[in-house]
Amino acid sequence: MGFLLGGRVLITAVGLSSTAKLVLLGLAERADNDGSEARPSVQTLAGYAECSERTVQICLKELIKTGWIEVEKKATNRSPTIYRVITDRLSLGVKNLHPNESPQGRSSQQSRGEES
Image (cartoon, rainbow, N blue to C red; front, side, top):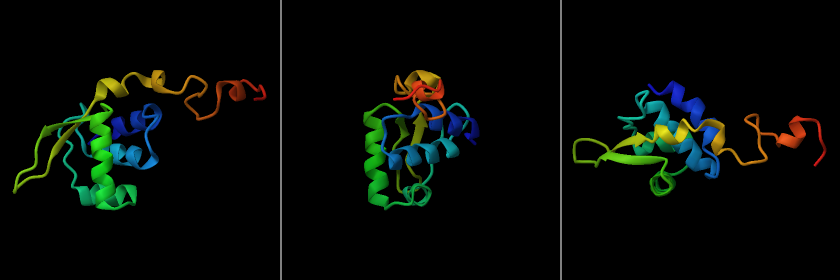
C-alpha cells in the first residue's frame, strides 16, 4: 500500500480543492509505493472524500488534467480503471508549496515570529 505516498500528498499537493486532495490521498493509499496499480472504485473514493460519486469523477478528471495522476488501464466490464499517482510530482517535496507557506501550513514570516 502507498502509505509513504499519503504523507507526500499531504505536503506537496497544493492548489487542489480539498475534495480533489482527498481523492488523490485515497488513490495514494491504494497504490503501490511507486504510485502504480491504484484501483479503488469510485464508490470507495467517494467514501474517503465524503462526497458523491459524481464529484469523485470530476476530481479524477481534474487530477488527470493537472498531472497528479494518469490512467494506466481503462475500466472494463470486469475491472475498474487503474490509475498511477505521479510520484515524480510528489518527490518535489516542499517545492510545490506556496512560496510564503512552510510545510506546517503557516506562512514563513509567521514561523519566524514576524507579523503579517
